[in-house]
Image 1 (cartoon, helix red, strand yellow):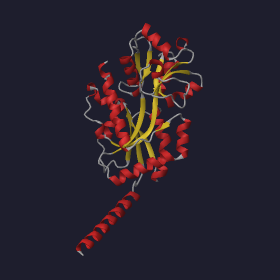
Image 2 (spheres, rainbow, N blue to C red):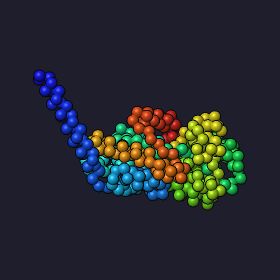
Image 3 (cartoon, rainbow, N blue to C red):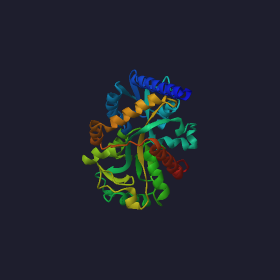
Image 4 (cartoon, rainbow, N blue to C red):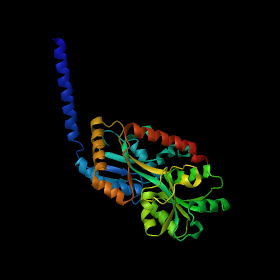
Length: 325
């Protein structure tokens, strides 16, 4: 009798807990949500966030406002995200770029944070790195082979527009310098892609290290010529452009894997609200078409798959050790 009564009480308590959790979830979020971008407006991550925000807002039932916090190669924003309070900052989510965030491995950065300080929800977009030259630059009509031949004869003379030390663009260059004999280039650091475009088209630099989604239109407009994609496969948006590995025999993976995070310690019911809304927004055909129109690839990695991706990416950065070059 007592066992039966105990089971009934347990079932009632479980049901009440589920109802309370559902009630809390239904009442969350209570107001606008901030989507933090760790760069100035105008770059690839910012553009992708602004495409995504209205679709996420539709699922959450509240406005999603994109907020740009620039500086420190992303670490002004990431330093704040790592300290988010699960109560005060429960209406905030942020974008963390892989492998860029692993700049904390560089001793000169003197960062104490690790990926363990971020509460990952899931992937948002995956944007392979791309190398480009001016369309009218006759030195490199043969693509990457010509670039490699030029750098071998003229070490450090080829100037490349890239983003900050530790960025995905920079790490792709650093990997090539480590793995290919005779590949040494000069680097000009730009705060964003718009600056890289200005530098290349003005002739200040010879090549851009960027990402596929941002530069496809410049290729279509006949202003730039792609040299190589830094991925395991060719880009679906640039099927005629070879991968770095196809040309050199050495696989060089460069990408901006943009992941969404929330405050550490955020209650599970609130975390699930964000996770479910993100999944539904990514499955929205309107959002999929919007990203496709910008030559962007939606990335839905989550759970164990995302954890493994993060671990493998960190190991890849440790192999390159770009801070020692």
